[in-house]
Amino acid sequence: MQMEAEDGVTDQGFPVDEIDTSRPHPARMYDYFLGGWDNYEVDREAAQRVLDVAPDVVLGARANREFLRRAVRYLVEECGVRQIIDIGTGIPTSPNTHEIAHEVSPDVRIAYIDNDPIVATHAGARLIGTGNTGFFLGDMREPRTILEHPTISELIDFDEPVALLLVSVLHFVTDEEDPAGMLATLREALPAGSYLVLSHATADFHAEVAPEVMEVYKKATASLTARSHAEVLALFDGYDLVEPGLVQVPLWHPEDGSELTPEELRRIGVYGGVARIR
Ligand SMILES: C[S@@+](CC[C@H](N)C(=O)[O-])C[C@H]1O[C@@H](n2cnc3c(N)ncnc32)[C@H](O)[C@@H]1O
Image (cartoon, rainbow, N blue to C red; front, side, top):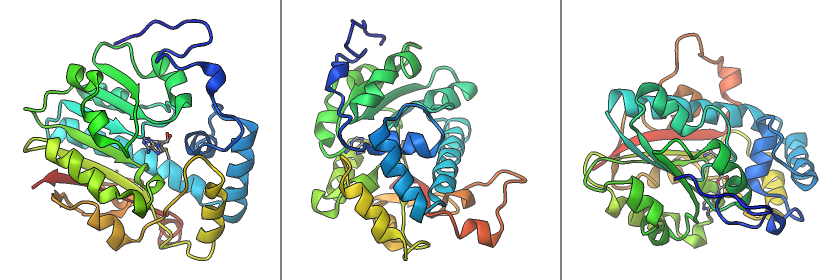
């Protein structure tokens, strides 16, 4: 899957000088929250404005990464999943989905998709090249285009169970853009025995600061729609949640010794769940 890199062009054929540094990008803001270096001044300023009113965002981002790790491990180790579609990949942050999966079984195939060119600039070196992983620029809001992409045909066999990862991405899709419709299109393509891993930002625990946070994202390349527990639960339509259901991410299959106090838990504004197709 490794593609040729040329001067000034990303591995995915995207000209580096077309990367927009005039507006904050959610992927780069998230990278900043996680302590990464793949962000620009405009992202750091916006991220800092978020942190000024909602410092708990850092805890939520870290807890979300931990949820991703436990959920992928669970699917590969305990459910036998051997192929993963990870939409809204994010700027590579170790351990990435393929690293987690390959620790259990090196034969797992992973298709990464993100709509942010900055992710493409790093994908070649850090996400693809192991033979059974691929990345392409694609948009969650165009699920058919994703499903029909040649990288998907190359890596994913729709006769075998697939894990679809939508980890911290659907809050960048507004109600008007119809997330339920996108999920239905993706679900219809998945065979029996497939899984959905979904996590999502919520304002349920930070109602007083949520409007200010959402205001910052209005100036970014994608706005933020925090959703309530009931709203996120509705996104699992057509799936059966595995235990313990849709919960704040630290409560999903916690590892021994990782339990949070009620006060710490109250600071985590991210729900997550894993579900099997009905
Ligand atoms: C908060 S990061 C999550 C990264 C990773 N999934 C994780 O949970 O650690 C959200 C990612 O979704 C991507 N994204 C936002 N809207 C998207 C869309 N409509 N289609 C595809 N990717 C999108 C952003 O570019 C960003 O990389």
